[in-house]
Length: 105
Image 1 (spheres, rainbow, N blue to C red):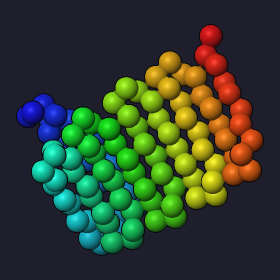
Image 2 (cartoon, helix red, strand yellow):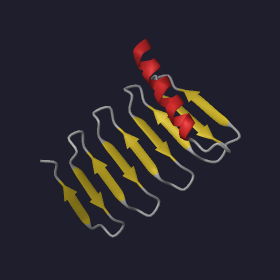
Image 3 (tube, rainbow, N blue to C red):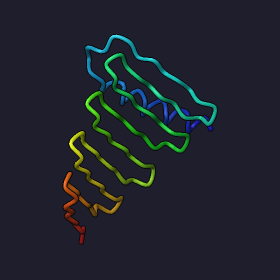
Image 4 (tube, rainbow, N blue to C red):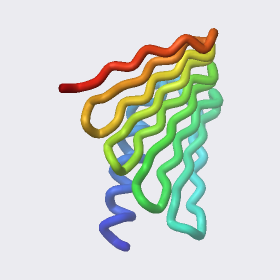
C-alpha cells in the first residue's frame, strides 16, 4: 500500500508540474479508496486511482487517461479520440466517427 501511495504521489507531483504556472490554487482530495484528485483554480484536474491509473482534464475539456496496463486514451474538446494499447497498436476516431487503425507489427 505504501508503494502504491508513493507511486500515486509521484504521478500527482508530475501532473502538478505540468499544470499551468499561473494556477493560483490547487485543491488536493484524498479518497477513502486510496485515490487522489487535484483541481486547480483554472479548472484543470488530475486523478490518480488506487491502482495507479491517471486521468487529466484541462479547462478546455481535453482528457488524457493513462492506464496501469500501459494503454493511453486521449480525447480532445472537439470530439477526436486516440487509443494506444501497451503494444503500440492505435485507433484514431475523428469527431465525425471516421476511424483509422494502426497495427504495430
